[in-house]
Each structure stands twice: as structure tokens, then as C-alpha cells.
Image 1 (cartoon, helix red, strand yellow):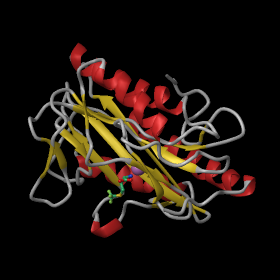
Image 2 (spheres, rainbow, N blue to C red):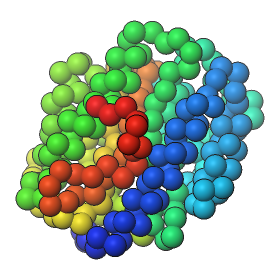
Image 3 (tube, rainbow, N blue to C red):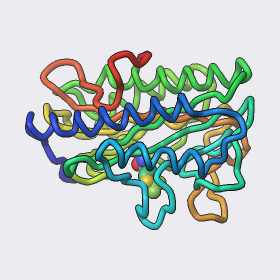
Length: 256
Ligand code: MF3
Ligand code: CO
């Protein structure tokens, strides 16, 4: 395991990358409406990323065909954009995407309701989002990595939700996926010591039912095994000498 420490100048560039990504997410949310195909969403996302000077980092990643992973309802992550797949009123839809700007990656995911959604679905989305904020309270230099995992686990399981184990957060920087792995569930070991200058993605993937997942035959889409709803929330953050800095959120974006 080798965790790359970033300088303040490098983090400044990651902040620019993250800011662009946050704007892309905001515009995608504003554009989202029932009847849109997931390919339309992907094409809009790719256009926005490129217009703002970024390069989509999902596109062609290990052969992924899109720029935005679009996962609906029981789909957890890595949904492939399609011209004949539409979002409908009452769906919950996750946009997971990232970009490279001046050589630096950013990565973030949001789950949104399409039109009016059930109270249960809304709670799942809210708890998933809040679990990120609970987790990053521990993302402080001098703490052990898995304190983040433990606090997410404790909070999420108190609602009876499932935590996906097969996928985790990760370090990020010049590469999309760097060390360390950042699990969202309690660990047997304490993990690495967090240090100023580490940049990681914290990304709880939460299910309304059991935590188990399957892969669809398309080789990408991860779905809940019991077909319960799933939500995802992710930001790229930097460990500082104080509070963690969230690099992929806008100032006026609603926080925890
Ligand atoms: N941001 C997602 C992740 O970190 C998607 C990566 S690109 C994909 O896993 F090709 F895997 F979709
Ligand atoms: Co990620």
C-alpha cells in the first residue's frame, strides 16, 4: 500500500477539478426530468465536462462505454447509459462521474429522486448522504482510516439498511483509483494513519434491503440481489491540518 501525499499546490489543482465536477452534477440535476433517456443524460454530462475543460474519467475506463454511470432504483453503481432506458417519475437515479483537469482526477456521486418519490426512498437517499458526513468527521490527520468506515457503518445500520461490501471508496489524485481502499463497513484492523495531504473518495453505497449485490450480464451494472432500492453519495475530500476539505461540493450546495 502506498498512499501518495499531495502538496498544497497539487490540492489546489484538485480543488479546481472538483469544482468543475460539482458544477457538472448541479447541471445534471437541473436537467433531470421524467422521460429522459440515460444516454441523453450521459451525452449532456460529457458535453458539460468537456465544455468546462475536463476529460471524463469514466469513459473507456476498463472499457466502460459512457461518461456518467447512471444507476436506477435497484441498480447500485456502474449503470451503462442507453438510448432506450428512460428515467420515470418516482425513480431514484444515481449519477456517478468524474473528470481529469490539468492532470488531476475528481470523482463524485449523487442520488436524486425523479419527480415525486416515496418517503422511504427519500429517507434512503438522505441517510446515505448524511452517512458520508458522519464518516468524514473522522477524516482527520492522526486518526486511523477505518474510523471513517466504522462511523458510517454504525450510523447506516441503525436504520436497518444494508452496506455494500463489494465496492469501496479509494484514494484519488493523478490516478482515479489510488491507495488506500476506503470501506464503508466496520473493519477488523485499524487501517493506515491519516495524514495531511491525503486525498480520498468516501462513497457509501447503501441498500434498503440486504447488502448483497449481483452483476448484470452487461458485465458492469451492479444491482441489489434482492432488488431493493439503493443510493450512493460520494465526494472527493482532502485531509488537512484541521477539518477535511470537500473538493467536489459547491458553496451553495446543501450539505449534511
Ligand atoms: N467513479 C466510479 C468509480 O470510482 C466509476 C469509475 S468509471 C467506470 O468506480 F468505468 F468504472 F464506471
Ligand atoms: Co469513486
